[in-house]
Structures are given as structure tokens and as C-alpha cells.
Amino acid sequence: MRSRLMTSVTMVAVLAAAPGPMPISTAQARSVTGQGFCRNADPLPRLDPEVHPQQQQLDGAIKAEGGSKRDRSDSMASEPPSLLLLHHHLLLHLHLHLSPPMAPPSPDYDGGVDEAAIAVTGSRSARPMLESASPVTVIGSDMTSGLPASAPPVTGSTTDSRVPPPRPYPRPQPLPQSGILTAGEHDDLLNPELYAAYVNRSGDLGQEVRNLPRVDTTRVLTVKVADRSGQPIPFADVTVTCSDGNSITMATQADGNVVFFPGLDRLSERITVSARKAGQTIADARPVLVANAAGGQLVGLTANQAATKVTKLDLMLVVDTTGSMGDEISYLQSELRSIIASITAKHRQLDIRIGFVFYRDLGDEYVTRTVVFDRDVGRVQGALARQNANGGGDYPEAMDQAMIRAVGQDWRPDAVKSLLLVADAPPHDQLFGRTWQAAEAARAKRIHITPVAASGVADKAEYAMRAMAAATQSRYLFLTDDSGVGNPHAAPAVDCYLVTKLDALVRRVIDTQISGRRIEPEDQEIIRSVGRYDAGKCILPADFQWQN
Image (cartoon, rainbow, N blue to C red):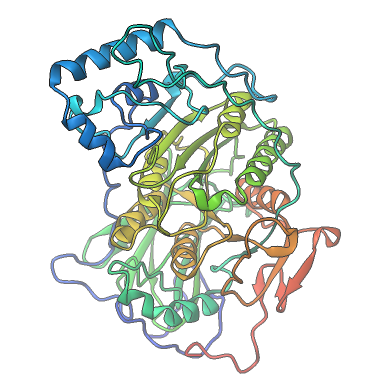
């Protein structure tokens, strides 16, 4: 049905295109039996608490040097429980009383990360205590527990042949200079026609991934909340109520906009839209007729209070630290450190907190390692500097657990919420659904997810990252070969983009999220351009059709 102009509500069709093919599962916003209209996201999946580094070492949850997992389990199974307990207490005594000096801090480190602020989850932490009491040699000197990497042998002890001699801590190596890596970006919400075509072309992935997410951009409903002078109202709670009484509430970003997808959100044809802030109504409910034709719809609400400025930023960096990232991890560390320093220097008026979730995969030294939000930039810089790339093995990684950990952190309700996902691999096929649950929970919490695709990204990883970015009103970033660093980078399935330095690009994206206005690179920042690019939009051919 054709959209109509509603009283006191501005509805503008921002895309003019021929009707497109209706996606398989989201063609019509019809009520699903037992579920109804206005679908709300499922709650964030629950994970077991992360294991503290010290506890993990004592429990044997950190990977041991030498021998396979089978070898170690066989040797542990052959020892009587009494001897295992003796080894456990002896190793604890050696760790506490014969510890070598701590490794020197990184150059930019000004006091170390509070041990209580870092937690590690090990994929083997659920083993019985007797199994975990076997002597191990802990590797990975970047751990923050303060325990030694190994204990020296004790003359006459039964453990002489089991505990190797101590090895010196490796000194921190200087990181490469920042400003080397290059990247492009694409905003799928500015190019909904192209993203819809991309999703349709990617249908074959659904044969491999059972719970493949589908963000249908053939129809997009944007609600913009502004004050009487036209200034955007950030963080206003916009409630959409469907014809069956169900409702969805999501908050505006710094630009005053919140985006609904009639297919994904299962909107009814007739809805009402209202806005509240700090528990008070700022825009009364207005009726809206959701357009059924392909294209975009803009609904404007005028608030009865003045706009306020953004004063806080919560920035969470989720970083894949598996071995496949080894070709770029040190460069990425330099870039991220530069980005953090630049953002905190430029926005001194903002209350900024920064956190990390580093992740690998099941069976690795750790699955996730969390550094909670912290205002101490030197402390979080030190945590970043101590990371290294290791583990992995197969292509997919534990992205699902990392995203659940990150989204579940203590995000402030009155802050710009930005999550930077740096990865080169997708989640495991059977865990796509759980990863998407975390992304939808992030959307419900108003968290921007901004992926940074490193070398090695292929079809599944790009699809997952772009879906998360589109759903959370963010952009898809990807490294390019222009820097000459790392393994070859697959060309993204996007029609147009500009290549600039990665650190400058990430700063522009976060500045955009803070200011509420898109920031384009200066001419001298552009290394090269691909396609017909115009301020984030790709200029479409005159004969472009949705079905193509």
C-alpha cells in the first residue's frame, strides 16, 4: 500500500526504486503464529565466568609446553591422586617463594593493569581438579597474574625431572610505527539497494550456516528525533507499537536517528511512534503507515525539550589474537594505540572509558581475555601491548564468546557506545546464531559494531561483519594491500570505497559516532578510490534494478 502523509509526522521517501524481490523470510511483515508483530531481540546468551589468570594457572587451564593434550591427559591419569595433590601444593609453593622478577612494563605503561580487572577463560577450565594438578610449564609471558613462567628445580625433589629450568622473560619488542596499515570502508545503510543485492547473492551461505542472519534493507524505517530548532536528540528511547499491541523500544544515536527494519523487526502495516528520555515523554505517540514498497522511509519527531551534547564515550575493542593474525597483529597494536591516544587527546571534554576482549578459540591458551572499561589510558595501552598472536588452527574462531563478553560489559546508558571488532575469521558455523544474538543484543543496547576485517577474511566473515555493522548503524572497515603489510587481502564485495590510512579512518568513524555527522577524508588523505563514490554513497547505474 502506498504511504500517506500523516498529521504532524514527516514521512519522506529517500529512495526511489522499482519494487524489488521479496526476501525469503522477510518479504512481508506478517504476524508469525505465536509471536506476533514487533519482534524483540532474544536476551544475551550466558557464559560461565572467565577464569582469573592466577586461578587458571593453578587449575592447569593454560596450555602446557611439550606434548599433545592426549599425552598430558594420559600422564595425569596414570598418577595416584595423592601424588597429584602433592605436585599441586609443591608448584604453588615454588611459584610463591621462588619467583623471578616481573617482566619490565611496556614503554607507554604507567602502572600495570589491575589484576582484578582482567579475567581469562580457558577452554579446558571445566576439567576436574585432580586432572588439572599435573605440573605444567606456563607459556605466554604477557599474562598479568604476576606468577613466574616456570619454577626452578628443587634438589632432591621428586619433581626434578618434571620442572624445567627457568627461562628469562623476553623483553618487550618495540612495535612498528603507526600510520602504516591502509583500509577502506562501506556504509551499507547509505547503500541499501546494493546491500540487499549482496544479501540475495549470498543465499548459498545459508546451505552451510543454519542460522545465517538476514538484515533486509529493501525497506528501512528511520525515526529522527530533533528539538524545535532542528538539533538532534541523542539517546532518546523511541517506541514503535504494532497493531497487535506488541512494541519495540530502541534509542537514537548521537545523530538523533534510530533505524528499524520492517522485515527483521516484523513491523505491522500500521504502527505508532513515540519518544521518551530520562523516563519522560518528549514526543507523543503518532500514527504511521509503514510503506510496503522498496525504499526508505523517514519519520520525524519533534521533542519538547532542547538537545544536549554528548559527554561520554565507551570504547570496547574486540581483537582476534589467534595465529592467523600474526602477520598484522603488531601493526594493529601500533595503530590501535595511536587511535586511542588520538581520540583521548582530541576529545578531552569527554569522559572516555576503554576496554578490551581478546579472543582465540576452544583448545587454545585462552578463549577470551577481558580488560574491563577503564579511564586510565596508560593502563589499557599496557594491556594491549602485552598481547601476541597464537593458537587458532582451524579457520573459524570463538567470535561468539568474544561478542557475548563484550556486549555484556558495563556500558553506560548516557554514553556513545562503540565496539571495534578486529578479526580475520568468522564464528564457527554452528555458532553463527549465538553470535547474531550478541549482535542483536548490542543493537538493543545502542552499541555501534564497527568491524575491521584483516587479511584472511572470506565470504562468511565478511557477511557476518557487514550484517552486524548494518544492524547497529555502523560501517564495515577492511584492510587493503596498499600498505604492503601482511598476507593478501581479499577484495570486499562492495561497489565503491576510498582507501586511506587505517588509523585516520577509525578516528573519523568514531568522531562521526560522537558528533552525529559523517566526516569524510581530506583529499590529501585519499590513497586511491574504487567505483563511483560520493560521500559514502555509491552512484548507481541509471538502469540499476533491485533484482540485479
